[in-house]
Amino acid sequence: MQATIAGIGCALPSGRLTNEELERRVDTSSAWIVERTGIRERRIAGDGETTASLGVAAAANAIKHAGLTPDAIDLMVLATATPEQPIPHTGAFVSDRLGLRCGSFDLGAGCAGFVYALVVGSSLLVAGDLDHVLVVGAETLSRITDPEDRSTCVLFGDGAAAVVLSKTPDETGGLLAWDLGCDGSAADLLEVPAGGSRLPASATTVAGGQHYLKMAGQEVFRRAVRIIVESATTTLEKAGCSAADVDWFVPHQANLRIIDTAAKKLGVSRERTVVNIDRYGNTSAASIPLALAEAAEGGRIKEGDLVLLSGFGAGMTWASALLRWGAL
Ligand code: UT7
Image: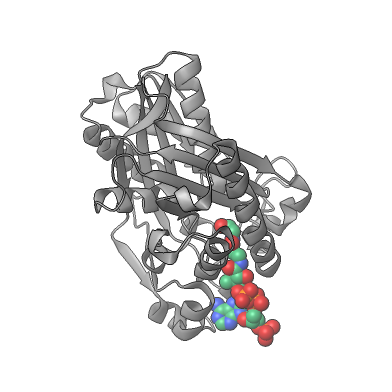
């Protein structure tokens, strides 16, 4: 018995933030952003839109796409780096609005969170003999981004995507192999310093902007390419496959230069690499499932295709998964 993706859906806020608008806000240029990142615009949550509301909409679309109703879901795993609030976990809000009463928990692994959640959800489906597991990646990075910090505010966007995992008796289908990792010695490269146990939120932390995301971009960039290539290669080796077997490479959408360099080193062509960073920027745990949803809904990924997912993020975490795409 294996877990396979039986439904996929996404949700994007309608608000758009273009490079031209950013040019008016901070000392940047659209040309710099496009050349250094590949991003042209991002979606931004408006009033009433939150990580949970986007997660609910994406999950509802995935459940409908799977031909199911919410009562069929046995477990939900939600990956996010921008929770609805510190307590309770975001999954509680999403579950409630979907009408679920099954187990639900959040998983924090930065931008690698969705692939982590996919592996955990697939494993619990098999171990617990569950029928359907909902895996959600939902983010509102705009809520933790310093609007005056040009080194981060041009990068991040909001959105959500979800998949329904279901059982397949086909041993050659579904999740074939995976690789998860975390090098906590690099935790300070990408962090929100305040608001937790070490540095509780206070007037001082807010005045110092310590509730905003801080990133050592160049060092993260340098590590990201190496991490993606190593993790993706390990995953392919575990499945006894090579890059030439991969029909679609779906990397975390953090920077087009990272994607292009990693794909080239792996030996996967641009034509087989899914890219949507130009329209959404970096949506952290939502980035890989958003790209996956667009490629699947657009008819690019087809039944039987071998799909390689690979992400990295705060922690620094990394996660790759190799899937045999089923009939949707
Ligand atoms: O998903 C989580 C993981 N995150 C990532 O993967 C992000 C990884 N890092 C990156 O994508 C890149 O490092 C950035 C896009 C963040 C920055 O690009 P870079 O090519 O590494 O630029 P840099 O940090 O080396 O900065 C080059 C110059 C600097 O100016 P000086 O010191 O050379 O005068 C920066 O101050 O570009 C400047 N700069 C900007 N200029 C215009 C930094 N941000 C901007 C900006 N507009 N928005």
